[in-house]
Length: 639
Image (cartoon, rainbow, N blue to C red; front, side):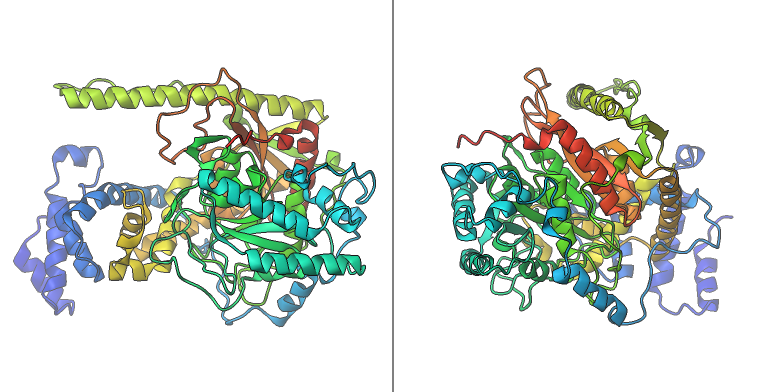
């Protein structure tokens, strides 16, 4: 059908559309689509979005106006995002599939869930000697000559010494505070020290332990919080310019629960601005294994401090890799719990349907001890679910069915390099050659790291594990990621609408200001359709975990995206150090990849499990960790 402007406008009038603006914009966009080149039509490609279309769409959405530079950054993202719509539409989702979120019509969780909180917050705990493997107080090695010799000790060892009164919480707290102050100028991992609060807590812990009032394995243990968790009396900056002096009048639920367990909060740690990457308003947090690299993010400071022996454990958060990525880069053990296992009250919201809080520590066992203290509903976060976490370090893991993502361990497909185009200019040739060289270097690094993945399978088989090959559901997982951006754009709508997004440190095409602008133009129908696709993903992933209890996988992007969307738990373990023969890392760490490596840097392995099977996951991952000992490796901090 050929478009005729007069007929089109008359049709709009008959349909009751009185405003002259909307029909004109619709006609313009439709006419541009009809006039697209025949070649694009043959290839079934939509016409590219233009700056003029952006102006029109912005007027419709009531946002903007955008500057020429902002529109230039937005165009590639918008064209890519529009391609994701087709991937979701191609699923032909039946009418019976609902969106992947649950609506609670009440303003708070039911009273039954609030009651469950009391049990989860530490009111009743397993016996100390059962909670920590090795019999708790038995076989404590002699104390080191200087307390700093315990900088890398596990929670279990520190707890045993504190309970036996070989050391004091005050001495331990002062040691970690001193290390934070000494190493922060090089690693840039502290936003705020909570020294006064910490010393008061440590003194109280020592007095209670001396009086026989022992609260459990976290009593007197120093820890740090990612600075998106509210702590009364201190700034909560979210790592972002414009929020440096923000504060809240109530502690986050997880902070309250760790206080109740007797843990000692000594600092608030860095995060990439608004939970992206490792760059914050004060600089960039560094990887203790190679300070030329960032620590990755967004739980940048939490991972870096644990790796540097500056705290016994830390809390991080993950929406799409923010525990996994820095744990991989810094060689820590990170536990991303099942979605809804830990209440997020008092934490910055980025994506309500994906945000999760979890521990970063030296070992699986340490992570389990922390999760035991912080999980369970609080009656405020309506997503929190009253699931049980029965941590048993002595679980008979040999009875579990263990799968592995076979295709992730198989040799990669041949590398495809870009060929020279006809009439290629000198600048185009240089760019192509640089891109090809970067692709070849990345493949060399992946080929090198693959030996660690295969060694992990060999180790598991040597442990008597019968590995079952499995695969992730074949769904367009990447096409669902705009759900996160749309929710984040809503969470920080005020920044975009007021122009305060200009205060954020990073302003590139991949950074939040541009992503928020793109998210504003994500159609509501496509958001719902992507959520329905997410429902398919949840169902199919859950079916996978009916066949196996645990899945072993390299710490790669596809499983990371899929399991964050479906809410399944993950444990990220250090899996060795690259040798002197490792390919060199890129000259510049762009923050986009965790596996840039280089000699002497850590690699990781990921274990997955079904919803709320976090305790089972931890028991199996602990068995592998104890069998390899990679978590006992530490960076040489000669600075």
